[in-house]
Length: 156
Image (cartoon, rainbow, N blue to C red; front, side, top):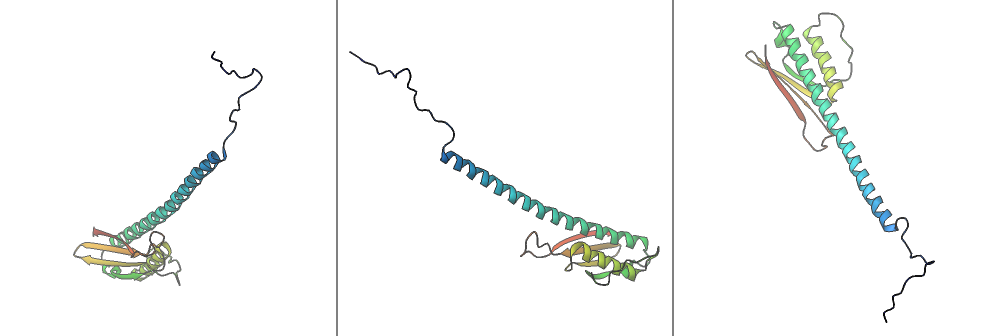
């Protein structure tokens, strides 16, 4: 005779309820890794944004120099040479007609304020072609890297 064991009608089988501790720990681990990845993403975003800002500032300064040389083509040779960033004794020049020396000083101040104290620039001319090269340190991007350089050439 085959007897089947049937549970008693009043007895319930044990069922799992809730989460086990291992499931909670795995979920916390996955969440922690995700949050660390998000923090790294935000850090890289700040670096990329600052680097792009420096490139934009260098571009604006370059085209400002080009425009100034186009305005005064006769005395454009006065703008040629090397520039170093200046932040001391930077007073804004006033007046409608700035001379070349005043513009050079003001431009050096803007170079220092926009790209930092270590920024340098060189303005060279070859015939009608004028090249402006601006170099700056981008230590947020890579502390050990050499200076970044933006260079553009135009024809006067």
